[in-house]
Image 1 (spheres, rainbow, N blue to C red):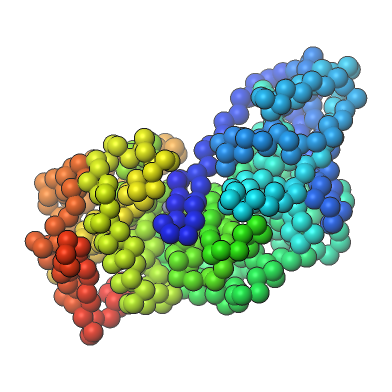
Image 2: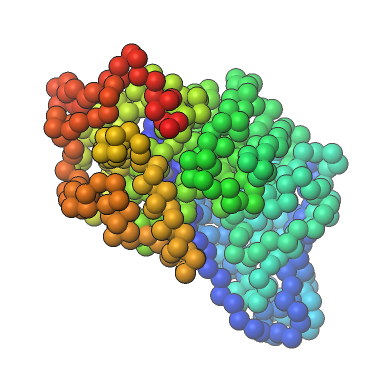
Length: 497
Ligand SMILES: [Zn+2]
């Protein structure tokens, strides 16, 4: 998913990396990675024992340019050594090994996890490169695995041969385990596994509806009591999200929330792995950062699990905007954000930002081309979809006399999504699925017209002609709609129903 924080940072998209697989040798397919770290230096030593991909040679590719745009990533890989003949092609991030004999092979190298330290690139360099300091070793398998092209192994083993004793350790596939235990990692999951070790780490375990949840934070943060800040997420927000979706299907979930080392100004950045969220931040853990954490973890449903159309750019108003609305009402439900914070986010971050934007009427299909070059376009689908979701929730509540809400619509759509996944695990919802589900709550023609006019063509909603639920009122100040909520209206109660 493409993830952008509106005000304090950038969140990144991780494309799926496909691996070619074919048969090549008679040895059983084997990829065994052995790791060593002395606990002080920024160097990870790696030794790979492998069955050859083909009789004569094995070609390895290191790194993935789509993973955080690390153009220089090949330089991280150093001191390559093997008994066989080696040819390096740095431009293609390629290592070719010409075998001099039969049998299992071995190649050793080091991974340099030194902090780059460029404040301008902190957000990408501290997420998408290995980071190894005496305090924290941060790895995803992508950083130390070299990928043999055409190799038939579907899993790789990872084993620590030497490491400092007694350090906190986290590997997402087997939380709570000791580094000395060998782990098996599917080779297509090398961007979806998190490995952390270091004296500065604090690992906490929680249960959310019986599902193990973990937080990994750092003692380096001396401004925030980060454990206390996260407590309400585990006690209320995460269980609340699972209640919202009536979904307790997950093996585990983790959030890694570690300080940025190269910048001081308040910032937040991160990316989602399949079963977790990896976040880096600096400054106070304020409402904004709480919304980043809440938005990203909420993507487990809208975004990661449910997508309308096969390209995530097609209907980002839903993937980002509706997710953002679900995030906000669940933050209110969990008591993490109150009426003031709610109004602030609706009015400043959404209504004001959108209605005063120079691109507010840009058609949906013009966004993709400008997304990475124009910040106005980057944030457009979030605000457009959020405002529409807010409007749509109000209409369902009004039409049902307060009995139903956007949640009932989203649960209908989620059920449809599960049917699609049962038939095809990589299948996606269509706009017609959306309209069919919405038509159970609001007349189909109205839904169809609004999606076409407001989401696809880009016309803004005219709140002068729109009715909202009791206690909610939108007035215009100049040309900007402003939401007011009456004193006696309890929004926590509204969003708990
Ligand atoms: Zn998002």
